[in-house]
Every structure is written in C-alpha cells, then in structure tokens.
Amino acid sequence: MENKHVTPIPPEVLAQAQKKINEAIELLAPYMLPLTPTERRNLPKMGDKTLSFVEKAHEYSHHYPALCPSYINIEEFDTDVTDATGLRLCFTAP
Image (cartoon, rainbow, N blue to C red; front, side, top):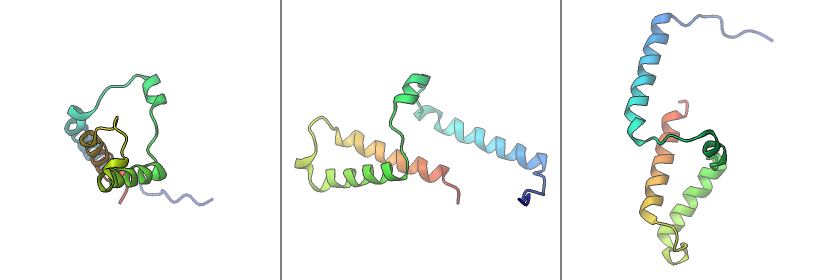
C-alpha cells in the first residue's frame, strides 16, 4: 500500500487549527449539555438514515399536525431538527 501522506503539517497550521477548534467549542458551549457516559451510550445515534427519517417526520408533523402524537412539542421538535441539521453541516467535510 502506498503512503499518500508525505507532506508534514507545519506546526503553525496545527496551531491555527487548534485555535479555531477552541473558538468553535467556545461558541457552542452555551448550547451543549454535559452527559454522563451512560447517558451518552443510551442516546439514539443520528446517522444519515436516522437524520433522513427525523427530517421526514418533522416535515409530516407540519403538513399533517393531526397525525402528530400529543406528547411531541412541535416547537422543541423544530429546535432539535434545526440544530441537528446545522451541526451536521458544521462537522461534515467539504
């Protein structure tokens, strides 16, 4: 197998990247909730298929509100879907 990584990343570039990562963490910190390892393991995972399903359910909840279960708070659902979609775009490689 050929090694395709032959150019070292300059320390200045790594320092800039770390600075930007820290800035992103600071920007998002007020919106993040601390989770225990157990809570993290028990949460449903949002992969491509799951996110597509949630987005479709969200769309249907607005088009057919009578079919939406009464225990779902639509405003909170809107917030969750918007944030999940926005964060996914932030962390998806260009």
